[in-house]
Structures are given as structure tokens and as C-alpha cells.
Length: 192
Image (cartoon, rainbow, N blue to C red; front, side, top):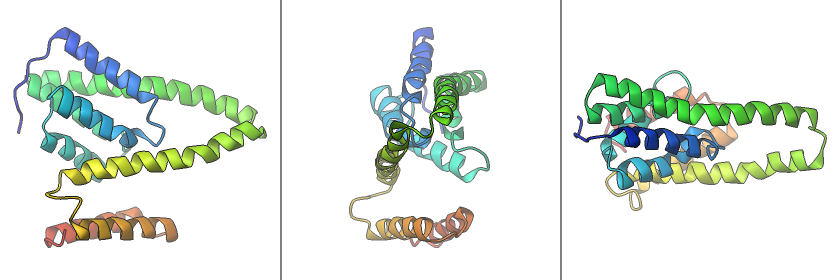
């Protein structure tokens, strides 16, 4: 399902520059920046629908491989909406280069520096201080993804499932694929 849009060369550049800029904010992984991507792609630019955005994340999370694949799918859908497979490849390429190049370069440089200076108090404090930030970004992502559901604020089953999954991840060594399978079964049975 596509919705037709027209993208000029400056729009493609804007898409690439957006992902360049957001790349360095993805401290919890690219998924942590999904709320801002939704704001940009769906709300501000109207290049994607809510359904395309949510489906891109769901498909990429269900597929084997790195979580960042949803960025390629978002770019792919923007390209498909702009006119077909060729544009889809262009969108996927621009988004992936934009999200990967700055963060990969910074990560490589910072890791080398942090390894050389791992005993410094500031390095240890930085690592400990990042945890609450990452958790907050992931909670915001959860809210955006749950918003595609009928009424996320009042659906107690959705929140109960989310809380139970979080506790299982935190307190057990149960493999995530078992929880993903249980969630898929619950959805197939219409429980959530």
C-alpha cells in the first residue's frame, strides 16, 4: 500500500541530511530515535503513513539481522511512495548511509579513545550515565509504536504484556525469540 508523493532532488538531500543529523542521537540504537523519525517522516513531511511506519519497524524487528534494518525499510517506503523500485533503492541507500556513517565513525573513534582511557573516572561515569538516557528513549519508542494500536493509553492488556516482557528480559535469561513467539501467538489469538 503506497501513497503517491513527489520528491524533488532537494527533498532527497533533506532526507539524507536528516538521517545524518539523527545518527548521532541514536545512543540506544537506531530504534531509540523512532519517535523523531515518525515526527519527521509521517507528521512533518507526510512521506509515509502511520501504517507504513509501524509496518517497517515490525517487519525489520521480526526479520533476522540488525535492528537498524528498519531504517532501510523506511527509506524504501519513501522511495516507493515517490515512484517505484528505483526510488525505493535510492531511499533505502540514502537513509542507511545517513544513519550509519556518522555514528559508525564516532563509535570507532570513541571506542578507541575510551579503551585507552578506560580507567579514568569520567569514562566510567559516562558509561553509567548513558543507561537512563537509553531507557528513556526506548520508552518513547514503545509509546510511538503502541500509538498505532487503537487506544494505547487505556488498553491494559497491552501494558500488562509490555510490563511482563520487560520483567522477563530483566530478571531471566529467557531468549528473546521465545517472547517474540509468545507475543505473536497472543496477537494471532486476538488477546492483544
